[in-house]
Length: 101
Image (cartoon, rainbow, N blue to C red; front, side, top):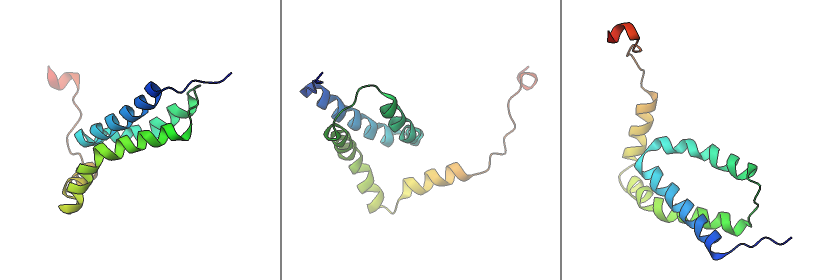
């Protein structure tokens, strides 16, 4: 049985990559999708040609490149700030029911 890889299928991979690039710009928590995305694609019962995955990568690069260029030009200000935020020690105590009451 031959699978039909239509224009809509190729477009959906481009949109997926572009959306992921935009999400990375909006918040660094989206980086958790890096290990999740290949896991989902490997479990997915539909197999697509490598060209489709390359289209997703191209969509990602197109939408994420302005942010990368900004980071390079300004000495990775946002990247270093995100690393500093993740590495700082949390000194807050957890909220319990008794502390709220």
